Length: 169
Ligand code: OFO
Image 1 (cartoon, protein in one colour):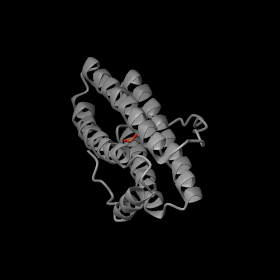
Image 2 (tube, protein in one colour):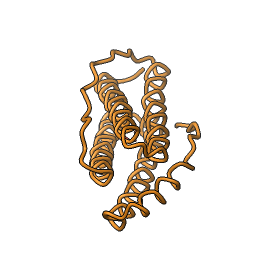
Image 3 (cartoon, protein in one colour):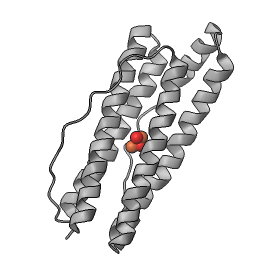
Image 4 (spheres, protein in one colour):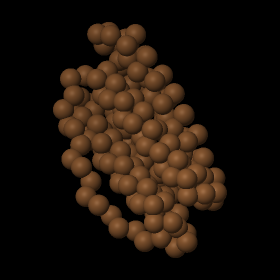
């Protein structure tokens, strides 16, 4: 059975993962508007990953005998000045999610819930990957600057990303 404090921390994190999905969906629409199909594809994979992150926790709360109560999802931004600005926003958001997951892991430790700690390790490692991945693209966009050819080359590269359903936990 999940401790009440632990359950609350999981429910809040599920909301943040669903917000992430929503935010990336909004960014996908932004890139669709620009007709940058590789970026659209990259964001689409990101959307699916966030959905999987939310559902991993959703299923875990149920498995542990907790009760799911869903809250409203905030309205995401929908206006950015450039792909560079979008990726700056993604990195900032992922850093926020990393610190939020660390706080959930702190609750697992405080409540001496070892099973939840082990489960959360997957998310902690995933955040390292997410930040590195986004940071890499952001660095490329900074180098590209105003160079349209560079942007199209990156768009081609991002078109190759595929979604692989994660095995969480
Ligand atoms: Fe769920 O990792 Fe991004 O937010």
